[in-house]
Amino acid sequence: MAAGLGGWLCLCGLLAVLAGLGAQAKNSEDVRCKCICPPYKDHSGRIYNKNVSQKDCDCLHVVEPMPVPGPDVEAYCLRCECKYEERSSVTIKVTIIIYLSILGLLLLYMVYLTLVEPILKRRLFGHSQLIQSDEDIGDHQPFANAHDVLARSRSRANVLNKVEYAQQRWKLQVQEQRKSVFDRHVVLS
Image 1 (tube, rainbow, N blue to C red):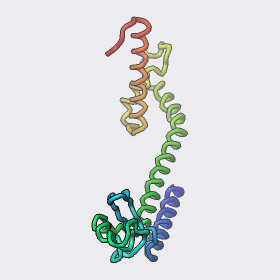
Image 2 (tube, rainbow, N blue to C red):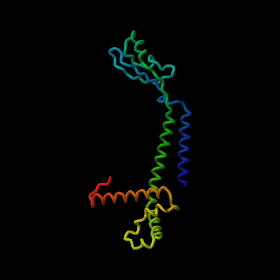
Image 3 (cartoon, rainbow, N blue to C red):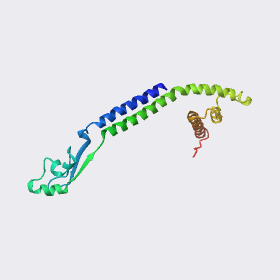
Image 4 (tube, rainbow, N blue to C red):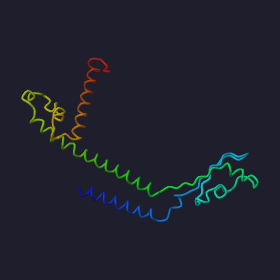
């Protein structure tokens, strides 16, 4: 519990630092003017990018070197489409940190389930021996009804039990298919 709280405090601190960075002046890579110029006479089309202010976002300020001589500059620039683009790198960084944090929490949860599953199985199988009826005592497979115990166990109706039940049901289906294919030579549909 304390480790989870410490992780959240660390994440909040990191977000506060990134927000402080966002309050500073904009990074020069966060703004640009992009001009897309189509082919003109014997010149091929090109895309030009330049870090300029929004008021200077036009063909004359962005397209360097000018591919056409003096008299054709105006006709060339009229064909170009220039757009001012702005992005927030702080928002991008915060989003990536949140995604990585969620991925990390899911990974920790998976490790937790992987380490705790054998302990829960031992506890559950020990419990299933006590629940078995008199007619099951002579059975050669004492844990054959473990998936039934999981289904009937209301006190332990959590996600892990549901996954375990589905896994047992799937295993039984695979065993039945193997029997059908190899013993009876019948393919199930």
